Length: 433
Ligand code: PGA
Ligand code: ZN
Image (cartoon, rainbow, N blue to C red; front, side, top):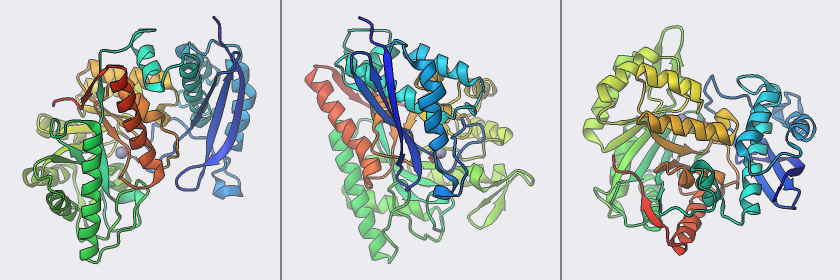
């Protein structure tokens, strides 16, 4: 039975930083509906798809009224009457109509809102939860239920710095991740992460550090050095009684403290070369259970990335965020040059669901790990939790255990876990590395 896109509704709503973003509803000819809200980054890569902002005085220039006009006008004309189950065709039609490599004509926020809302509408039309519908779509397996699914180990943000907090820490994120096999299921792994965060709050409080949180729900204290973050994590993990059960992950977001001219990194009170940055990381890795490091170097510092990958790529997961921008073409260039060994997956960096799937497929084919990710500007939208499961990413980065915009994704993962179990699907947690 045909079920086509019949109507779109779109509105300006607000993200977790109180900035405008796009929410779109797709309504089909059978009156099935799907809704999605687009996220927004702060430490954005140069090659990200364009987020269209009005630039007027209103809302500090961040209004998205033009993006909404584009959804309701030209993009509606493009997708109206299209089969809601043909996600690839819907996305391709919007990409072609925009005609630019970074979606700057209609805006990636406009296009992605329709792309994600269509996916939701199609799942609803199929009477399937989003994760299962998306899994079937990815695996061209209409009607079949997977035998097993790999749920993502959370990379939970404990300490925020960089662009996500107004504090002394240069790296953007220090995270904890339950060790593969340390917890029997997803709910108990999430429970343990929460306990560590509560213990960390106590430690910070005892040291008279603030316990207010940054944009991604981790604490944002003024520490004396970035390394102190890992000493505190050691203490919090041990206080919570989980010694040896957690690894640590970093997102340096180094593009933000890199000087293109001098090719130096302004990190922890000194200007450092790529080589010196790598030495700092080697030192930390020898002292703390750090297993994953994202954007340790800037997106344009390819020589540095090559050196980093050659030196540490066998011991560490090296994740490219700004480096790859979830862009299949840029990722392929990185794979060819031997940069990094993992992909951070952010739907709005590329701007459609289909291209996100393509980026993941390319990464998996090259033996790269995939980490599904939120943005620092988020909302109650939980699409990425379902996509992480559908794509069997094995890892998700979606903030600390506070702020409803972050917790919403963890709560959705708990629901999906329960639903999959009820359907008799074998639920695995993480991928052995
Ligand atoms: P962003 O931060 O959303 O501000 O880019 C998240 C990240 O860098 O991973
Ligand atoms: Zn990042």
